[in-house]
Image (cartoon, rainbow, N blue to C red):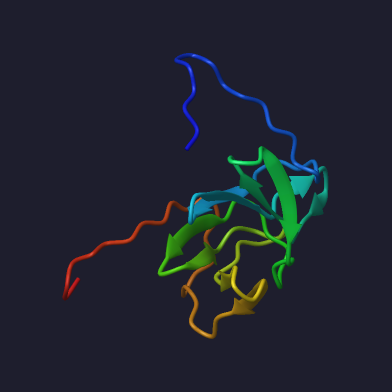
Length: 126
């Protein structure tokens, strides 16, 4: 577990310099997905381990995307929407850390969305 002093932000250097990552936490690890480096939209993914203070690349997503929503559920990481540099995406990808693979899901949002927040609602019938 990482404990930070008040009013101090640590600086971590990812191996791929990019902006507008989607960010999610799964099993105590921080995932930075996609983003862009100038005009280049990325599909790369890196994971930060606070115990080792290291960033490690994992498998690339299927699609290049930035400004995506990211959420973890039942041991998997979901990436929702974002944009590819020319249009908003309606697609959803899921990452399995056990197999280091991304799967593009057949179900998707009806309309492409970028800069979306995502949440899990545990309420039957909702």
